[in-house]
Each structure stands twice: as structure tokens, then as C-alpha cells.
Length: 283
Ligand code: C2E
Ligand code: MG
Ligand code: MG
Ligand code: MG
Image (cartoon, rainbow, N blue to C red):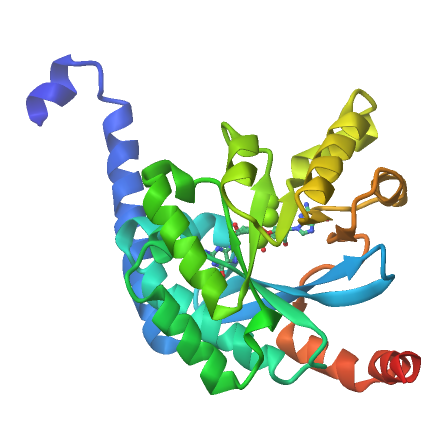
């Protein structure tokens, strides 16, 4: 090691790699503690139907309240959880908690849960989902699993088998971040997803002119033809909403409608005027 530091020219990088490894190890220890101590919380972002003009449900998004560092984004810790296998206990908690929260909502509302690749191929995923559904008492068709194209990379046949097994449970399956993978279109042909979630990058593009409209239209037309719902992620502006509606996108999600809300805020909101209005209009 002394030799490398002396002659290889790695001198300046070595400490930063050490530092990175140290941070990683510490984060893994912290994640283990977070699981033991229950430092995670689910937030819920509304999913809104443009065609029905009503709230359809919520996407559950995990937050980590770190005792020293405060709130940490899933973008920072989900990849490490995935690498270390800690995503299994975390993901199991997410599914249970999401179903539990949904059991306290109006039963017309769905809950969407993100499922990472390692979790997806774990042997007892269907068992865990069944347990969560049974414990909460919600109807299986209120639970939607969001998976990304990356699950297909490992083994297409195995992936298909799992997707069909999940479908047989009665849960819904959405293809998340659509359009960001290498051969997105081919996956639409291989499995009848209930919903395609158009990645935020395409929605962001709409503001920059160009051919964003055409891409949205192509995806919605294709999804319609295949009998799949569409949802556009990351809608932040009225102009984007306008275009999405015109181009036939059926559902939207984004800060324009609402940021992710705490479980408590969702329940309070449900028990308030919004819920009364919803009941009145349904009656
Ligand atoms: P995702 O599944 O694509 O979730 C949507 C992300 O976009 C969320 O970020 C949400 O807060 C954010 N978002 C929604 N609307 C807007 C908008 O209008 N503008 C902008 N700029 N962002 C918007 P979040 O909560 O930070 O989650 C990031 C990613 O982390 C998720 O992307 C998902 O891949 C992953 N993730 C979150 N929760 C879980 C979980 O429980 N399990 C697993 N495996 N992954 C999760
Ligand atoms: Mg998602
Ligand atoms: Mg997404
Ligand atoms: Mg996304």
C-alpha cells in the first residue's frame, strides 16, 4: 500500500476511495439499525385520473428519518439496501405498512408500492404479499406493484413466471419509469401490465418544445391499444397537464397536484371535507 501511494499516482484518489468505503460501511450499519429501530416512514403521493377527474389512490414512497442526519432520500439508500440485501426486510415492511394504511382509506382508493429487482426475485415475495393483504384486510386489487424494466435484465423467463404468479394473486402491476430502459417497447409486448408510468424526463421535456408531444402521444396510443392505463410522473406545471390531457394520458402524478404526504396527513384529509365531498358525489 505504501508503494502504491508512493509511485502509482493514485495518491490523491486513495483517501477518497477509503472515505467512500467507510461511508458505505457506516451507512450499511445505520440501515441495519434503522430496520431494528423502525426509522422508516411511508409518504403517499396522490395518483389522479384525468379521465374520471378523481383521486384514484396513492404511491407509497419511503423516507428514512436518520437520528443524526435527518431525512434521507430513497435515491440515496435504496441502491445500498439493494446491494446488501437489506431491501428484503425493508421492502417487506413497506408492503405491510402500505396495505395497513390503505385499509384506513376509502376502499375505492388504491396503494402503489415500489418493488426493487432483488425483492422481486426473492422466493417468498408472493407469500409476503399475501400475508400483508390478509393482515390488512384490503382487497388484493387495491394493491399495485411498481416494477422497473431492470427486472427483465436478469432472466426474462423467470421474470415472466413471477409476474404471472403475482397477477394470479389479484394485485395490479405497473411498469415504472417507462421509456428510460434500453428496449422498453419489447417489454410491453411480453406482459400485460395494468399500467405504464411515463418517466418524469418525458414530462419535463414537454416544456422545452421539441417532439415531447409526439412521444407522449405515441406511448398513450400504444398503451390504449394494449389495454393498459397510462400515468405521467412528475407533473409540475399547468401547461404540462394541458398537453398530457390533450395527448390522451389518463392519469397524472406530480407536485402540481400534491407532493408526497405523511400517512397522518392523508388520513386527516380523508376524514375532512374532501372525504365528505367524495361520499356526496358518489351517493
Ligand atoms: P419513483 O418510483 O419513480 O417515484 C417517483 C419519485 O418522483 C418520488 O421521489 C417522488 O417524490 C418524485 N416526484 C413526484 N412528483 C414529482 C414532481 O412533480 N417533480 C419532481 N421533481 N419529483 C417528483 P422519491 O420519493 O425521492 O423516490 C425516488 C425513488 O426511490 C422512487 O422513484 C423509487 O424508485 C425509489 N423508492 C421510493 N420508495 C421506495 C420503496 O419503498 N421501495 C423501493 N424499492 N424503492 C423506493
Ligand atoms: Mg414508483
Ligand atoms: Mg416512477
Ligand atoms: Mg421516476
